[in-house]
Length: 402
Image (tube, rainbow, N blue to C red; front, side):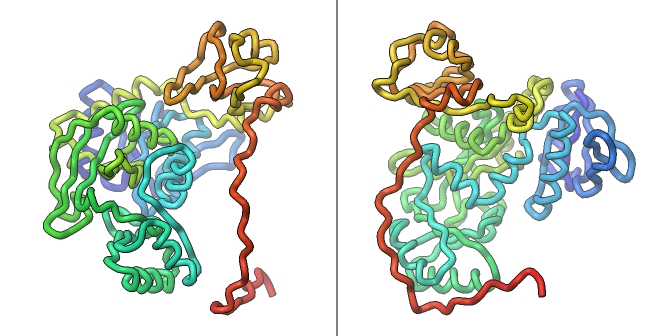
């Protein structure tokens, strides 16, 4: 396998371990500076240049993109995808995870445990938002902070208001999040590769510090995750669109609470804590998946007029309840890709499997044939009557031109 690692830190521990692991397995590997690429859209096919020269024919690319170069780095990864080069972490997955608000929005609709979170812009909405997440103390987070930077614990409402006002005055966007007191100064990092957790550690903050990041002096210890924590970590990574990820979870009273999903997790802390070859697990996974580059289904289906992919819900009383997949769906020209029953997901289910009420099916086929099985749009509760607030001046938007 010809592997490219995108990294601006070729001598960093994580990069060096990945290079060593690839060489030990007989693969060719190059570390390439992400910012030295040029995206070439001048020819008949998508292409890339590196240091002003055409790139080699790589089989796979592993992005290690820092937060400061997210926009350009994601564009480079996206171009590799258009060239059908495999990556375990596609561009949309990196973008999803890098923005804390976007990540929380995506996870919130998939029943993944998270600390209560709010995002507001108006000063008049700050106090109600603090109450909504459980009241002070409250955690305030910058949307794009890393390694614990931009994470503040406000002990009371007045401090929270002052911090938020200060940050917003500097054009910073912040999240409000419930402070999980039972997990103060402790969290769990699970390293997900593919569909399993290959290593896990507990991080413990130093002294009175509530942030447990190793970069802030936190210590680490090996932890054995139970099935619920492992399932939550894998689910969070896959929902983000990542196949290699560090998933940070708080140990809440009612189970795991996902704080963050990292697309470029550091390997030093977890390898030294667990004494496991995490870099080797990542390289082995890439080598096994290299023939299956990420497909953008929406692009591929543009030539299939009237066909598409949709999630269907088998409702109680539907005429297909009690029928097999072949009986109820094949005659409609539908193919079932996955069947979700409760918490169990069955890929490529057999045609003789009997359909039950509340089954969710991911199907490909004629859109007209799916129409009566598409779940109804979730209805929100009745909208309260909102009165305009006079305490904030209204400013016209600045026009785009003269």
